[in-house]
Image (cartoon, rainbow, N blue to C red):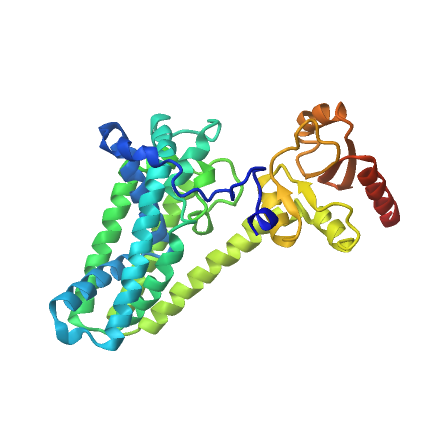
Length: 373
């Protein structure tokens, strides 16, 4: 199955799946020079996920600790319902700790290098992508959703206990933001590639090269204001209204990402996809090269019976099909090399090309494209 559906690196290992990669960094945790970077990974991601949840993960976190503590101390609270709740809290919390803890080790070098570049870096730095570790929620954020849901439901009662939990939640949220501004913000403030969670709530458009105060500060101010509003609604026994506001924000985030962020990726591979889908039963090949990460993943998802290789073919390959949208923007790099290796270039649409090597493949593509004209 692995070799059929998800080989992207041309070797025998599923891409981006090595759980022990970077394990040697554990020893670096005992080096004081790495402590800032290690702490920044935790603070950055925890602060960012609090923004994504409009702050509500903070009181939910406090509630989870209180709930588990009381379950341990008082046997009469260990009802079937409470035990089910405790299982969800423990499983999700353990998943968050393991995932974020592992990521803080495997990505420690990236975080350290980003810190070493100094504060207020610009997007011109070739290693700027290292800073992504400070706001990258792709791995552990999925485990926060069950916690958020179950916590918000249990916090809806207007009890003295819940009021106190909300106050501690506000304090935790403020504490995270202050530490984030001191230890993380200076190293990401001018970097666009790490601001995905903040962009929907900012006053800048997606895709700009500069982030800065127009992205992070408006997002934090807006989310803080609505966080306090939701807490106030909970306090006044209007938790349903608070949940509606939270749901609107979550739906808005996903809609924004889908329209503004993800949709443009489709334009970079739609011509190649439509071509292959139209003639899916006539394709003379079952292996393609797509030397562009986002386009390769899209192809592998859409064509799970075709082997997609994200690397370039070896020089001695006699037959190959390479789909790309990098030519002619970066085409000089490809065309100069491939021209001397027997490849032909065919334009699929305004921004997509296919490089073909092998007479059988060249004839097939030429015939198909002639039929479409």
